Image (cartoon, rainbow, N blue to C red; front, side, top):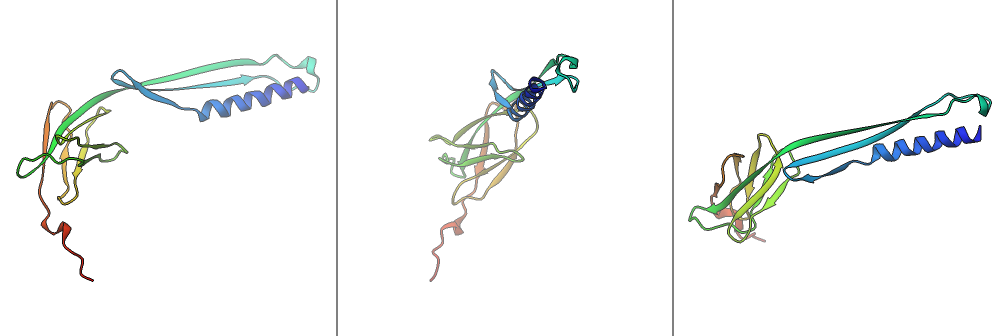
Amino acid sequence: MKSLLTTLVLVVLLLVVSMGSYAQGYADDALLASNTVATTVGEVAEDEKEAEAPRVTTTTASARVPMMTIQGRVIDVDKDPLVGATIVVKGTQIIGITDADGCYKLTIPAGRYTLRCGSAGYYDDEVSARPTATNQTVVLKYRPDAFKRIKR
């Protein structure tokens, strides 16, 4: 009876650990997510000799999500690059920042998205993400009232 109880406790612990772990990472151009669940089936008997040996079944599920790359440049109306502008993929937690040339490059799961671009002192702008475009330019307009002095 002790060994059957020990086996059941170990199986429950294995299930908790297996279901709590979720491996996610990038593999080439796809997001790979996998999870393994193990279950044990057996009979509970009063006498250890009557108990059937437990059978362990393992199931592994994998899903590949195609990825796309969105890249572009954020500039002002004078065509000067905006360094450190933020690019937010709406509806996700994906955020990018422009480099010294005002350029950004994001790799995200394939689909239709809206990008929200912003920089201090400029009005935010939203554009549709175009996965087929090699370069997408976003022009932000200067907000003259952004740095007005606060009167005390």
